[in-house]
Image (cartoon, rainbow over all chains, first blue to last red; front, side, top):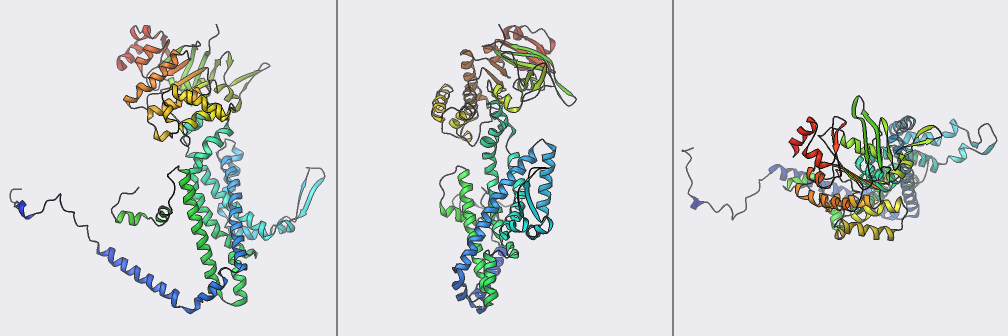
Length: 313
Length: 253
């Protein structure tokens, strides 16, 4: 220790009065420059490639046919989400029940509808008439009250709703179950000692708390559902994608019309993301939202946060 | 006079482990009963059997002469459904070690919830009564705070007010101060003392020996799932008859 020369303090500035220089990361700058270069190339492609035919894109972006398709896509998304969540809640409660029949049924439901691709289901439901030609409601061993042929009941729309809602119900059930199980047992005990019934406890105490946990994944699922609805084009249901396909099958302007569909899907998913952030924030009883904050949080990533040396929130 | 609460040969097993071994206990109306004992002695399980949060393996609990959780029909004995049981549980308020306030509701909303939902009182009436209770526990100015904005002692006082809002005939306390920082214990014990002075019947599982000595009418010492010794706190604390009581008191006093 004694050989280390003691530097004269006069040659060094005061450590408390100057800021240290940050560590320089060459890879940070080189990587950034590479990616920026690629981005510039991509933007040039968008601007200069004439096959994109931007004028055709603008021409069809607000055409009645496309807007009608957009409306159907939105309707399908929300109807199948609502149905999926209702069925999913029932399945989740059955899964948590002590009744072994309920447990097994809900397990099998989730196993089946999470395991079969939605596209297979859509085609299957559409062809249900081949399996069960006629549906009827009757008193067992008694007279028939109502009956109809399955083909008249299963339209492209009802087949699409069945397939999408059932798939969603399996995922929703697992999210809701996890949300309910995350609630401390003490909450139900406290409610029980106050004389609340099981239904009152579920409705007033458990579900409102579980909702906060399951809103973010439900928001995610809604955005996924928006994209899954494009599968219904196989049933010739004129949603956003199928409307675009019908136009380009007449005009052969394939790329511009796919761009039209892409733009609308991006617009819708952005709106849904904003809505999800808003609802999530409201459930947290936080301060009023500022648009800037939401926009910032949309593009917030751990990568950048850590690079800048900030502590994660 | 019929005791308010009567426990007869109550036993509870968890698998092969026998936690309570044929407990007998009576609580007269207006009395404060403190249950003390080492951890694992079964005192919390006993308290939780009183309102059937735990279902006893055998034996019975009578509240005002009626068996809790069980019902005679003719000469057959039936278990009560959860919803039938909830009518009896309303009469037994319970305060937990971990408070268990509803985190998505303010202090006021926590208190008016059960009176509105269970007793179907109007919001105006429930709110008026809730403010009186908040005043009683010294938290009238915290009505609109969420539980996470309150200290442990304040949360526990709101929890006591929440139980009182159902106008119970009996209050059960399960180690109400064990989760609190030492400097917050006093404010909760003060509320409990005040309740005792007003004549509330209370069964308190606690480690606070000074509270037991000053407030209890009846002190119960439990160890190994049985009541080893019971009596007036002055007698039990100053002149314990059993060696197990003596060694426990030597450790905690």
